[in-house]
Length: 73
Image (cartoon, rainbow, N blue to C red; front, side, top):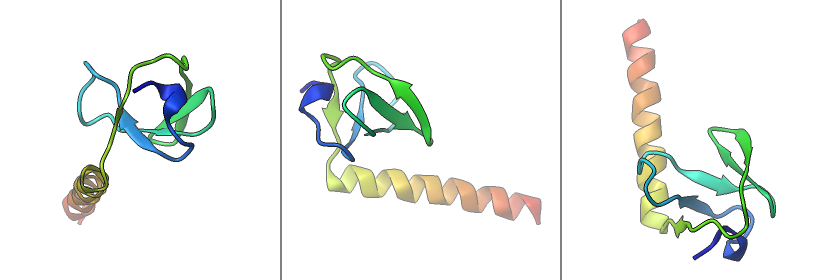
């Protein structure tokens, strides 16, 4: 699948880049990674995440944030 084929708002990753790097399609020519917009070519190959993978991603992110809070107390 290519970036161009995604719907705006879809979560995806790029083959060959760490599976922890989850992107979101922000527009037809930009994606976001941790709220930072990055340009991307429409023909870039991407892997669309399933709802289970998205849920797992956010759970892992939340666990990390909780561990930071715990270490500060």
